[in-house]
Length: 118
Image 1 (cartoon, helix red, strand yellow):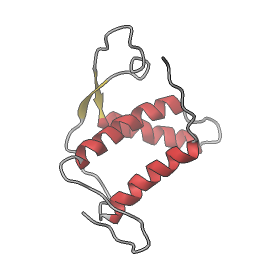
Image 2 (cartoon, rainbow, N blue to C red):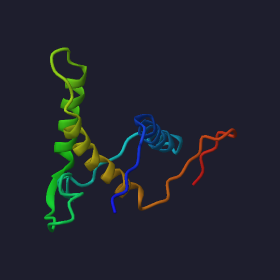
Image 3 (cartoon, helix red, strand yellow):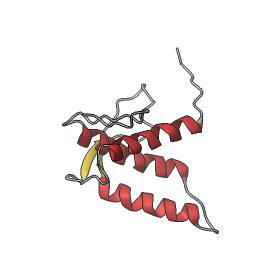
Image 4 (cartoon, helix red, strand yellow):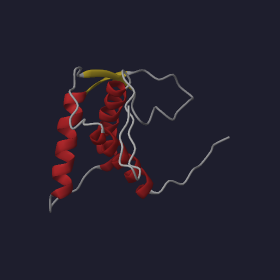
């Protein structure tokens, strides 16, 4: 049975901003990319359970370059961002961020005391 959820874009924005805020509260202002290549699957295959999925090799360098081009296109007057392309490449960056944070517990709060904690 297929489950459908409604997800406001504002909630996705809040999640992404909060993750970045939590990193900065812990003093993490940039992430060193110690790897370039990673395993990935095409997003159309991620939700098709009828056929086996073959992983492909993704590149963080390509992800960064393409995201920067998409941001340039978003700001351009004559062309716009290709949202699905940008999301595909952001997925690679977010995957690496999760990987980089997995070695140590990174948590922070933006509560009334303003404290970030390990």
